[in-house]
Length: 194
Image 1 (cartoon, rainbow, N blue to C red):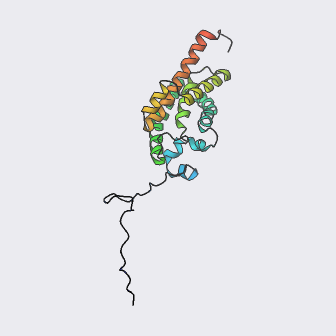
Image 2: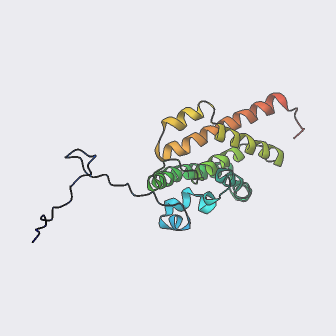
Image 3: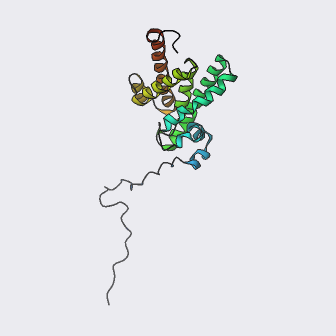
């Protein structure tokens, strides 16, 4: 009669792990950014621009473009100071919303978070002459600065984290856009052309 060896429990650690090192546990996958993710928290909905950030094609550009009709409506109803206060409020809300959403996604500056572009471009539109040609140039310059991130935008984009970092680099892109437009208007374009 053959006797079998008593059952022994499997080793606590794989052979490659030294004793005392816990077994590797895969980190949970970050949630997929989709419609359900946007509905899960108001911050997600806001950071993704109400769903614009779900665009498969250039979500930052789509969020920026969406600001044209919103600007035209708000500009009709708000004074300049009220509009500036609205942009300030959006900036503060954006710090919170992008911070919460970035942590939930495990990516502090996820490409779908477009509230930063939307807020900063409203600032560009507020201080740009209210003609389509100036606004179009403002759009092109803003997108160029936001994508290429020349100094100091790139520096702060790398150094700052969290919601403030997400919002701040786009604010810099807005200021650089407005500076270029102001120089162009003062020194390049003769008055009265546009």
